[in-house]
Image (cartoon, rainbow, N blue to C red; front, side, top):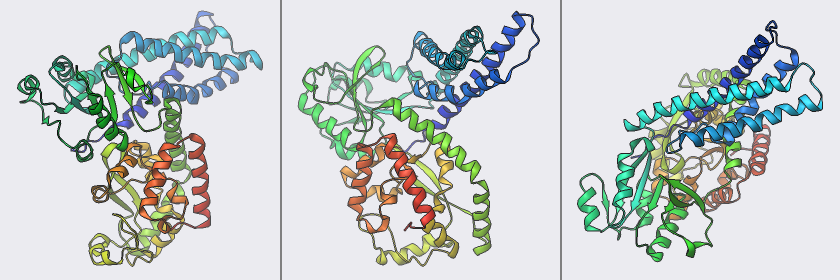
Length: 467
């Protein structure tokens, strides 16, 4: 029941729109010179502005979330987003023109670029919007939603079910209302309100819970909200919420219906978008700069035992999504079969399996583990969108099955290559403390903390202090 998300499409969309903006700038300069009957010739200053546009527009597109697969956003709202982005970006570009000044770059050129860029980006987005509406109608690119309903919820359920281009799929309806059961029982799984919500959310792949009862029950809301909060599932409440002012809420809409979202994960979307942009750019730079190191490690692994260079293992990521996690192979080929014979030597508490002097580790593998360089291929997982540079380590499915309820919340944030645990002694830390470190990272997350952990990780690599 675990489905794959496609965040890589958002990164591709941002990259494509960035290139469209760059081409719009070149086109605007060409049009401007053509209007003045001048030969097309770009000055060094104009080329410099073009180079600035690439990272600037990439960052602005990420911050404005214009790479995401829009679901219910209207055409006018999309246009306003692009107009706002272009105004901000153009004002930033205009600063050096006034302050330096750049004599060969005129404000008229920038204004023409703003018009062309807004038009090109808007048209391209609407084209993609039309395409993805078609894709969603075919059943792809969706989010799983559990609806908590009563007899008054039939209209909203029907809207979600019938409007497939919103990109939502109802995985279940929690209700005991006969009218709802009779109307939707043949099409959707009916979940009893007596079901243990904590266990149900852990056992299913659920992205959002929508409470849309016409007659709300405060105790029931609090119970479901606590279950969502503990493991990091987004909770939507179609209600006035006047008695829930103490909660940290975010207002959103679905088909112009006012909803409040509560989620117990970092809520600063501006900074989270910066984190995602940094992940992509940083990983791309690492892969390019360290490509010779990748090659040397691959040769060493092959020379050691002539086995596969990479080891791919199914891991559990954001909200239970499974993906193939890449590593340089550090163990003998038959390592998984040997694991059954070594279970009694496990030195780590909890569901994880760790042995200090693991006999399955190869000679090259021991060095790679000591320096943490076996994790380098996971930068490809970051580029693909499955992981982040910094975040809780992705567990294997068998470990997740043994989690206590509170430990599932570590899956509410995208897994990372490094985190607090990686730079704090690793195997010397008890499992429960490891889990608490991951939750501490989620609760205290900031860009400053990410950079601090990256620097500590680099130190660990160069001092070969990994365990």
